[in-house]
Image (cartoon, rainbow, N blue to C red; front, side, top):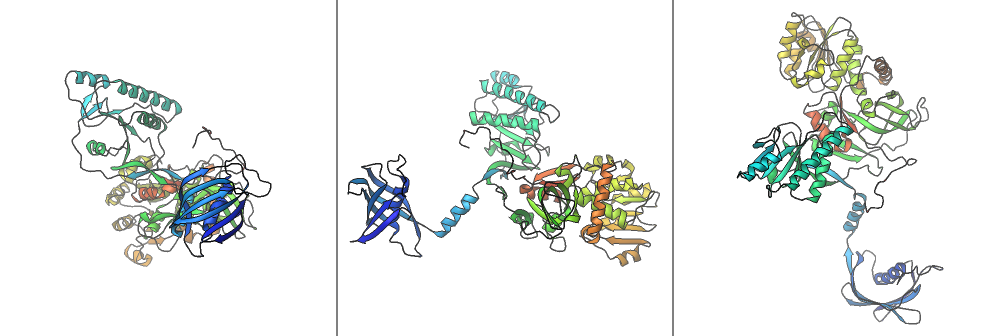
Length: 633
């Protein structure tokens, strides 16, 4: 009611005097919006406290008689339920504006709350959602070039059109793949885009293909599963998307992951212009609300209810709380994902520990007693609740990031290297000349353990699933000392390789019968170091059944202590700087696609380390380049 100067009732009508603030001019409007708004406020004078909020919904019979006023008088009369007639006149009674009907509609508080949430949640992004695939319908396919697919084969489009001219039946769809040069370089992307452009132009110039669709196959062109797209393949995808917008219905894009040929009939029946196939799942692009944190809010990826990865969600974080004297607040750029996180999400790990135990980022703030670190420093180390843009930890859990390390590389180091180091050095006391069995040697801890064991001078035996053996060989483990982690045959393989002597140390990450088979490889006694929490054994029972075997289960977070963690971090960084240790392969997902990363790790498909990257906030002192700045977007 800021523009209302006076109001009164007479004979069922409301009269209002309205005016713009002193000194304000009309601004060139026929009727100033502020003055018009004040006129409508008179219609709210009959409202009682607690009534529903009402807003103008529609008006009709609007006539403007005079312009340029800054003061006016209004008469408002009811002409039906929630409907008013409004007349505005000048100070001398001259007609200014009349409205035959102004209809108000009630707005419930729930709707208002929803509207407020809508303003907060109004940012959208591209998401890849699974689509249901039905039974394949009949489809006649033509396949160009050397593309591995089922259908009638032709060397190129020219050959196909010659066959059609000679009476061959027209296909429903034509499968083609653009030749993409090796290497993920700008030049490879340019060559691939030129090839795609030639294919598109040749297809559109054809006269014999009628309503057939050209299905262009790419491989790893889009991040449908959170993976990093192949730049050259992505250039083909981008060019074909432009062609789709200009020629609807003529092109289909299908991005494959190498898991096998899809059922083309069923896929084409979807009538989706763009699809991605990941592990036999068909995904299509959909508009979805962007993840939290896009406006700088404090949040973290957490499990709402243990037992299912579907209950992973973005929730508020307390990382903005006041710091303790020895604490550091860090802007997280990347956080390591460990199998421990997967077990905790699935409710298979004891205790209630927050997800996200390691990260790398930039110091934002330090506690009063913190020395050696200042805002702006790049650090990495151990945290609790690191799957978000900000996390807090003890100063002793951090180390400066060495020059040349990326945030993703640094986030992949703390847990796996500390666990392997503590298990082999502090607990097992592994010595030069001894034999050590490292289970799951292609995983994060396994690859770290192999490197540390070889540095200590031990003879390494390793298990991994067969497709990952190349990664273990690359660490320096010869074929005779590698066996499968998917069956119990490793006991016989390693027993034979050692002449029945077995090994001195087992670093275990398996369970059930695999534990028993591993204990059988300690016939002369030794140290069995258990990292897992899913199949714990009684040390006394193990010692009674296996003479001379010392069984010890550990959790590095609980066992080592903060001061020893700090010492080990320094020792591990030193080994990296000496060239003794090398970074394991890292595969990244955006933390807002964390559910996909959790599934990937749960299924044991990773080699090396899985890392969740966190979007960096805008620097308030920095600069932003906006291209196409005069467009609507």
